[in-house]
Image 1 (spheres, rainbow, N blue to C red):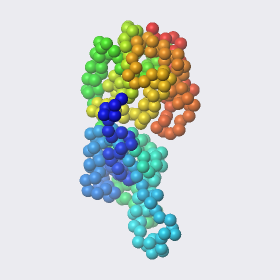
Image 2 (cartoon, rainbow, N blue to C red):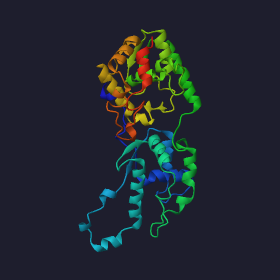
Image 3 (cartoon, rainbow, N blue to C red):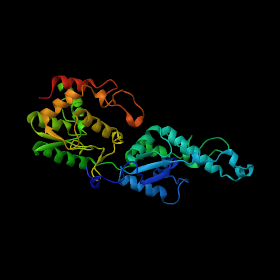
Image 4 (cartoon, rainbow, N blue to C red):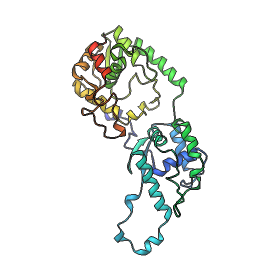
Length: 329
């Protein structure tokens, strides 16, 4: 693919840069607290951006590694330090530790706020304590953060409306039924097989149109399928699909599912844009990939981090194997 067609603002290029403590602080601010960690208007600006675009990339920082070696400091330097700076370093590292991240980590907005609200129940114990000289923020017990947490990430970050998703599904179903070819990301062929489970789960799914694709290929086994990298026409109605950018904002879009696509391409000996009749393509997939362990379990079944979770179990999904045995046609 020509570089001119590649999009800017990938995961490595953060649009928002902030200390890790500010991630927690934005939630408090959204809940009505006047968080003292922010300059005027900063929290509102961040919240406004992530409410518009869930794909916004955020880099979380800390200056912990900037602290000089003790030999570079005279005794008087300690008297000059601001205790709040020390407290803030601990806040940053506490947030990062809870999230399983490190200074410099870049993630999309939806992913970060989902993770934050899942793993941090209250700012008390991070932004404030009962310890003398470490009492911290008086708003940590205001309930502002907890009120937002009860509502969930959708209170903070953009989420598609049911009406929009329904409209995309209707248009997508029409395309799948009538177009001369289908466009699929390679690992979704495996997802389709897992969902079908050898005929046990022959029904539509709420967050994609894989069942509709299955119906089309069973009616027309010679329909052409073009394999693509990234989101495909099975994704259009998903709550994790962002129409304006064409990106996936589920945890799998960071970038677990992209690796799955490339691993399938390699197993098949194909490249993006490869086009084959459906029957021949499914036969090739089932011949070359006997288990989801090889793709969704990365070959060894080892989870190296939260972002690289395994779908279908480390030993492989038996539903995929069932469809591989029974076939689709």
